[in-house]
Every structure is written in structure tokens, then in C-alpha cells.
Image (cartoon, rainbow, N blue to C red; front, side, top):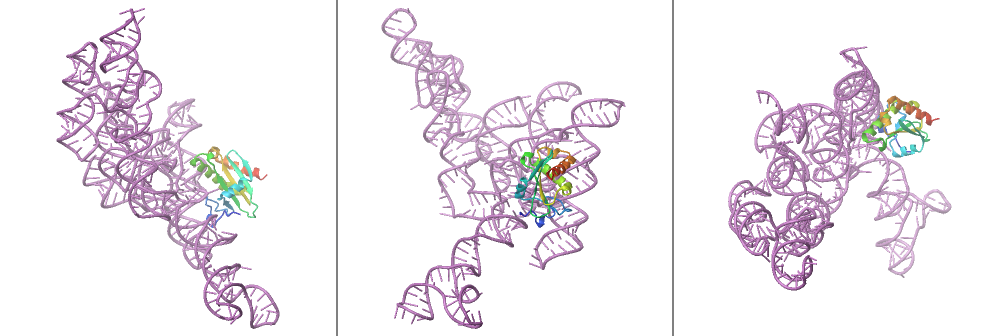
Length: 131
RNA sequence: GCGGAUGGCUGGGCGGUCGCUUCUUUGGGGGAAACCCCAAGGGGGAGGAAAGUCCGGACUCCACAUGAAACGGUGCCGGGUAACGCCCGGCGGGGGCAACCCCAGGGACAGCGCCACAGAGAACAGACUACCUCGCACUUGCGGGGAAAAGGUGAAACGGUGGAGUAAGAGCCCACCGCGGACGUGGCAACACGAACGGCACGGCAAGCCCCACCGGGAGCAAUGCCAAAUAGGGACCUCGUGCCGCUUGCGGCGGAUGACAUGCAUCCAGACGGUCCGGGUUGGCAGCUAGAGGCCUGUUGGUAACAGCAGGUUCAGAGGAAUGAUCGCUGCCCUUCUUCGGAGGGGUACAAAAUCCGGCUUAUAGGCCGUCCGCGCAU
């Protein structure tokens, strides 16, 4: 098991989850690659990849990816920050313990889609994966 | 007012709610300590290009006596600068009525090479048509000689105009212009102006090679230094009990060679599941890491200016799968639709995000603002 959580980032190097210590950020490339082999579901505003770690730990892992297809650095940053925000606001209520989730940005849509629609995209994708 | 030239600035604003990062204060907790964690309060938190990564430096490590060669770069002159291929001023050439703009702008008597097509001929000239003349034929032609002005080709054809001269002609000669140019004057210089004399010759390309002058050691913050953890396992050196075997359970024994042999002793060799030291990569952490040739403003001194000195004020982010935000409301600007002229609705609001740090260059950019100058028109 790759160590993805050090004492230093308990508060969250990517920036949140003070109130929820069971939510952890994926930082290693290997964790992203492993998750990409799991279940996938696409929506208008984002792609979701998810995988049960099966390592006995109960925390929820979450990562964010925006490839160059999304646009230049400004567009990628904006898409990633909106994904991070919807995860911060709603992920821990609907995700299952022991799973890793990777949210993938889509060109155009992730940055321009109305915020509430993006939030329901995430909820629908998680529901679809756990059916 | 219209058209144009040029220099500079700006890169939406206000307010809720919820967050991130960094510094700091206070309180609490953990630890031997370094320090770490939690909470609350306060402060800071993307750009003019942060971009392209094209130049120049700082810094770090490696290499290193010096020079030369090689390779790469720069290329009118002078100045500025830490430095530059940047900036400022000047010179030369070209464009524009002008403001102003553009130029890889050293050397072609050091040498080699190239000059397509067209054209007779493209480099110490040559003679297609045409010109003059002589001989033969005698009908346009053929052959010899003279000459290089005229035609045509080309980016470029070995000076131009006029006269004199001639069989026809020619710098063969003359005047003016052009060209080369001793020397003189001005200028730090590039260069400019004048010019004895020469006598028409010394074509272009150096962005083909080359020559000359000057500059340059290499790699880069994933540089580099330190710490911790776990581990496959490599190298060097050391050795006699704390190891192994046996049993009588506290005793005995335990590699080889040489010194003739045995024992003791000495020297040498070997030697681990032992000891000490060194090195390798992996993962994580800390440092480097942001205050410096610093930016901006004001005054002042020197300078045409770039810039430099002095004095005062002000201001400066430091992430690391990478913070600097998400969302909602009001509003500015532009376009547009409707209108009861009060307003209401719709759309748009660029380019592009620090990654060790500075100085430049180049490229992208919605909209807006300010200054200076030139030409034309009108008024006075």
C-alpha cells in the first residue's frame, strides 16, 4: 500500500476536510493509475473513476485530473478548482468508505456548466457506479 | 474637424457566504530535544506579458597552469550597464510632402567559388545584327581588315552629355558631370567638406566558403547540501573468542606453508553466519527559497540621452500532484431588442497563470485613458 497520507497533509495539502478526517487526497501517480483501472462513469460535466481499495482501511480517497485536452493552464486550473469545490461540499455524504475516487475534467463543460448541475453530475455518477 | 506619426498608462468595481496557503500573536496538547499538532485573532497571497524559453547575468556543482587550435557567437562609430545579440546618441544607405519609419551596415587588390533565364558576350572581355573599307562574284552574297558609337538581352554589358576628330569610329583629345584620390580642414570616432593629381581602370554575391577584430570552460535549483527509515547486497581492512565441536558441565580441542623433524616461537598466506569503515540506489523530510545589480515615487547633482550618484519616502507571494479560490447579489463599459421615454430584457467583457532569482528580446491581447508632433481644411 502506497503511503498517501503523511502527518503534514492531515489538514489536506489540496486544501480542505478539516471537519472530516476520513477524507484523504490522492497525491501519487500510482494511485491515479490504479484507480483508472476501476469503474468509470461519464456525465456532461465530468468523468468519474472509482475503485475499492480492498486494503482494510476505511477512509475515502479523492483525486483530480485535468489533461491538456481541457485547455491551457488557466482553463485547467479553473476546472480543477470547481471539481475540488463540489467534492468538498458533497462527496463525503454520498461516497462509500474504503474507495478511491478520481474526478476528471472535461473540455469546456467542467468550467462553464452551472454549479448546481455540476454537483448533481457528481451525485449521479457515484450512484451509477455503486449500483 | 479630418487623416497620420509617436511615447506612455490601464487590464473592471463593491459586498455577502464557504474555503486554501504562508507569516505572526495568544491559548491548549505532544515530545528528552529539534520541532510538530489543534483552536482563535491579525497581516501577506499571479502578470503585463507570469507565456515562448531566444539572449545576458547572479547562484551551485564539476573541470581547470597558461596560451593556441577547433567549435559557437557578435559585427558602422561612441556611450550606458553586473552583462548582453539589450538600451541611448551619432554616422551612412533607403522610403515618405512631413512628423517619422526601415536596414545581419567589417573586409571582394589574402585566396577559392558562384553569377540562373535571356543574350553574340557575365570578368585580366568579346563581336550576333548593324557601321566603314578592300578583294572576288556582280542580284540579295562570300572572304580579309578596321572600329566598338547604334540595336537587342539582362538584376548587372567595362562611365554620361556636348564638342572636336575620322573611311567609320573610340577618353584618342577637350569642357562639364560622375569615378578613384595624395593632402588639407572639422570631428574622440564612424564620417563629412574641400581638393592637387590620375585618366576610365578596380562589376556583383561574404545571408557559399573564407579573412579580420572582439567575446565564450561544462552542466544546471530535478543544481547542490543535510537528516531519517527500511532494505537487496557490493568493496576495503581487522581477527582467536563473546563462535563451533566433544563430553566428564568446566574442562579439552579447532586451517595451511616456511624455518630439517616434534613442541614452543617467528614470519607469510587463507578465513565468517564476527567486528569496523566506505559506497550504491529507493522512499520521505528539511535546507537552497525568496530583501535583490530590487521595484516604485519625490527632490537634487552630472549628462543631449540611455544612465549614474546622493537624500527622503514607500513596497515586496513563496506553492511543491503544485496555494493565490468557489459561489451568490449589485454594478461599470460595449452591442442589441422592446418602450407608456421613467425604464425593462438579452448577449459580450481579451490574452494568459509564478515554479531559484534578476536584466532584456520576441510573440498574444477585448475595451478604455493621457501626452507630444506632422499634413490638410476652417476661423482669427
